[in-house]
Amino acid sequence: MKTVGIIGGSGYTGGELLRILINHPEVDIRAVTSREHAGEPIFKLHPQLRKLTDLKFIEPDVEKISSSCEFVFLALPHGASAPVAKRLLESGVRVIDLSADFRLKNKDDYPKWYGWEHPCPELLEVAVFGLPEFHREEIRNAKLVANPGCIATASILSVAPAIKAGMVDGNRVVLDAKIGSSGAGANVSEASHHPEHSNIVRAYKPVMHRHTAEIEQELSLKAGGEKVTVALTPHAVDMVRGIMVTGHSFLRREVTMQELWRAYRELYQNEPFVRIVRDQKGLHQLPDPKNVVGSNFCDVGFELDPHAKRLVTFGAIDNLLKGAAGQAVQNFNLMIGVDERTGIKFAGVRPI
Ligand SMILES: NC(=O)c1ccc[n+]([C@@H]2O[C@H](COP(=O)([O-])OP(=O)(O)OC[C@H]3O[C@@H](n4cnc5c(N)ncnc54)[C@H](OP(=O)(O)O)[C@@H]3O)[C@@H](O)[C@H]2O)c1
Image 1: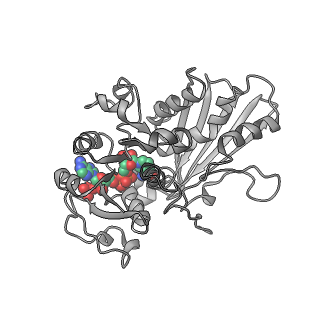
Image 2: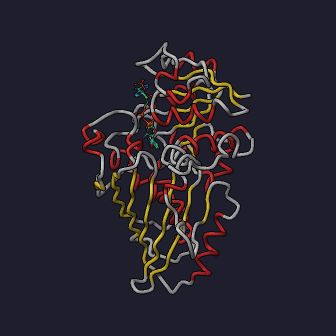
Image 3: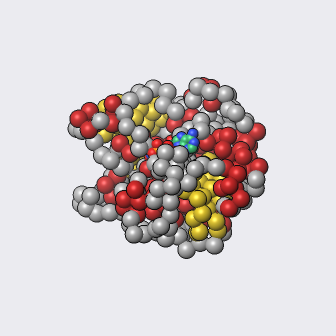
């Protein structure tokens, strides 16, 4: 058993971490924090967990938490994580950070994409980008794992095989993302107010979205170091959970369907949480968030457009699972040396 803490346990990703970890056979949860709700049972904020756990929220006291936990998940807003992670690491705790604070390798990318200087740039070298499909071996021994962003996870996994195979022009990969309201966390805003969020397909941050940086970083690695440039535009849509990323890339040469299958199979046929979805018949021919919500799967698919010499790619995930808490537990499983499916081997919820 490993002793585990969650700092930022009252938010949506914190709730999903708890739902998974209270049933995880290798986990003893020692600390779950909320500044506002310290002392209250966690089911007050996460009513789905009533009768499943007696845990109560505590204050985010880093010294106390590091003396009782070997592993800590940070489910804090970006900017708030870095100083907490630094103190935990100094006490010998291994950290899985769900925020963006350690995802980018180049410290100069933080002022550019996030608007602040990184407070501990030396830790960017220590951090491992927590996408198991591409960094599994480094994750096993990592002290600090930077869990990828949700739009980034669906984007990278759906486009990477074509980039790696050199099929498409890496200078203009266009990504159109649709995301449900839980992607913005539990805090309310004008944009999340029900009459303003219902029935929408609302573009936001149409250029320079922050996830662009980590998508480019990881796809460039797959391109063998050649710089990949991504044009990302997300849309808020009328779902609670789920992300759909439709990618448009332009072919460098003639590509057959067989080659595409080979490229996707090469990367994913042994991956427990990536499914290639490209059927010829029926309703479910391509990925759809509806079929992954509630699970840790990322469904990827593709179609060739000979008219426009275009490759269309599709990536669907549950933003709170493969996009956050599920992937964080997959990383944790690798770090503790157990089957990476432990605790997250469940299907999605259907119908939803
Ligand atoms: N939502 C998603 O789909 C998603 C997907 C991928 C990654 N992420 C990332 O994961 C992180 C958590 O996201 P979320 O959606 O769970 O956010 P959230 O619902 O807003 O929850 C944030 C949590 O952090 C706590 N908190 C805020 N500021 C704090 C501080 N300075 N010190 C200690 N605790 C603090 C809050 O609790 P109290 O106020 O009660 O203390 C709350 O528990 C974010 O960095 C987000 O970008 C989210």
